Image 1 (spheres, one colour):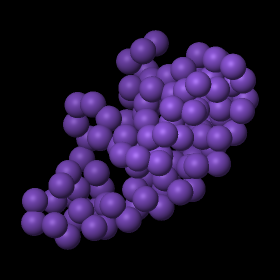
Image 2 (tube, one colour; image 1 turned 90 degrees about the vertical axis):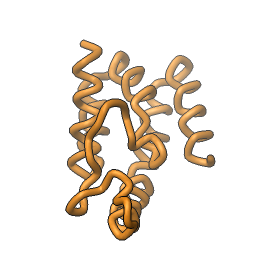
Image 3 (cartoon, one colour; image 1 turned 90 degrees about the horizontal axis):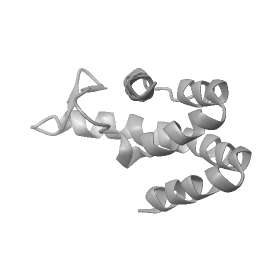
Image 4 (cartoon, one colour; image 1 turned 45 degrees about the vertical axis):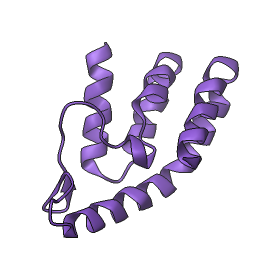
Length: 110
């Protein structure tokens, strides 16, 4: 819930002060990396697998990483302001599947 609220703040700042929005999002990436890494381990031990196979999240339609903060909505809006910085933001995620998902969704909007 807290991460969702922070994403709303980021979305609000995009139209007011994009650089502040980038700064907030970039400062959250280390925590999002920790959450997604932990979720991949924990979900992998559950009997259903919960979308994890061999330690990686399964890519499917939509963005299944939203609960860990890797929300596509602000990424798309940030890309409209500064595409190169947005790519750097995406590349700061440690999980390959999150980077791929975000880049694919961004490419679909071009």
